[in-house]
Length: 555
Image 1 (cartoon, rainbow, N blue to C red):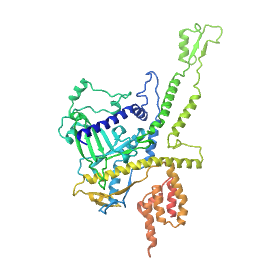
Image 2: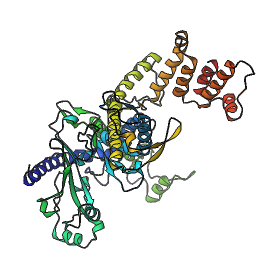
Image 3: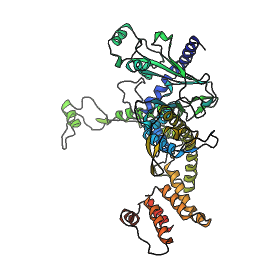
C-alpha cells in the first residue's frame, strides 16, 4: 500500500474503534462508578433524599483478584524441543530474569486483571525505558480496553490482522521522539470525560482553543495511533494533530521479533470471558451482576429514607391544652404537672400509628443476594460460618476451584505472552558487551544477550486458588502419605512437597538432610541441629502448621 492508502486504513480502523467505545461509554461509566462506591455520581436523584450504597461491587471484584494473585506471578522457562538450531541459550538464566521482572511488575499485572473484570477486557503493553541497565530497558503498563485497538472480526488473538494502541503523548516527548514538528496540540481528555453520559463527544470552542495556546508544551498533548499491521509486517505511528493527519509520523518494520523472525507486537490482551460468536469482544464480570448491585443500592436507599421517617408523632384535642402544657410534654421533665381543660383524659392525646415496612422487602433482598452469589464463582460463605456438611463443602470447593481455574488459565496466558515479549525485548535492546548478574539456582550468574536468544517454552506457575481449595489439597496430601510411602516414594521427596505445600521454613529440609547424612556416615554420632534451626524445630509452627510439623518429624 502507498502512504495515502495506509492513512485511509488507519482512519477507518480508528473511526470504528471510537464509534464502538462511544456507544459503550455510558455502560462502562456505570461499572466504574459502582466499583468505586460512587453509584449515585451520575444517577438522577432528589437532593433531599438520603442516598445509600453498599461496597458489594468492590468486594465482588477484589475477591477475584485475591484468589487469582495469592502470591507474586512467576514462570518456568525451558528449552523448546521444537526450536531450530542449538544456540547458546540458557533457560535457567532466562527464567531467573523473567521472574525477577514479573515480581517487580506485579502491580501492573494485577491492575490488568482488575480492568478485565470490571470492563470487557484489558491489555498489557511493553514500552522502552531510557536506562543503561540491561534488564530494565522495558516497562509494562496496564491498558484499558477503550485504548486497545483489536481486530474484532478475528476468530482469536493469533488470527488478528492488526492490533494497536491509541493514547495521548506529551508534546515535549513527541518532539523528542519524532523531531521538532509543529503539532496542533490538544488537552488530554479522559475517556469518561471525553464522552458524555449520552455518548456525545464535546467540541473545543474558541475560548478553550486560546487557553490551550497559552500553555507550554509540557502541558499539551497529541493523540497517537500506534498500529501494528500483522499482514504487512509494519508498524505505523499516526496523529491527527500532525499535518491534519495527512502524513505518517513513522512507518517501519515491526522491530520486536520472535526467535524464528516472526513479528511480535508488544501488546497482550486479557479476556476473562468472551462473546462466543465474536471472540474478540469480551464480557464484563461486573456487567453480569450490575443489575443486582443497582437493585440493592435502590433498596437500601429506600430503607434509609423510610427509617428516617419512622418517628413518634402524636395528635391531641385542640383546646384541651395551652402552649405551656404542650411544652412540658415535649420537654419530658420528670414529675411535671400538666393541667388539661377536659372532664375526661380519654382522647386528649393519641399516638399516630406507623405502618411497618412490608416483609416483602426482606425477601426481595434475599433474592438479590442469591443472584449475586450465583453470578460469582467465589463462594458467599468464604470467611463466614455455614451449615453445609463437609461433603457439600468439598463439592462446592472443587467446583469453585475448577471455575477459578478457567480464569487462571487466561491470566497465565497473559503472563506467558508478556514474558515472551519481555525476553525478546531485552535481546532487542541489548548492545554488544551488555551483561547483567542474576541469581539462578542459588548462585550468581552473569547474563549476556545470547543467553536468552532462543525459542523457549514458557509456563506460568499456577499461584492463584481459593483458601478452602488449598486446605483441601493439604488434607489430601496428608491422607496420601501412607500410600505414597508404601509405593516407595523417597521420604526426602515427600518432605520437599510438604514443606512447599505448607510453606514451612527451609530449615526443615536442611535439618532432615543433615540427619540423613549423619545417619549414613560410617562412624560418629548424629549431631543435633543448633541455633535457629533447633529453635524452629523445637517451637514449631502454630495452628494448621502443627500437623505438618508432626508429619515432617515422622518422615
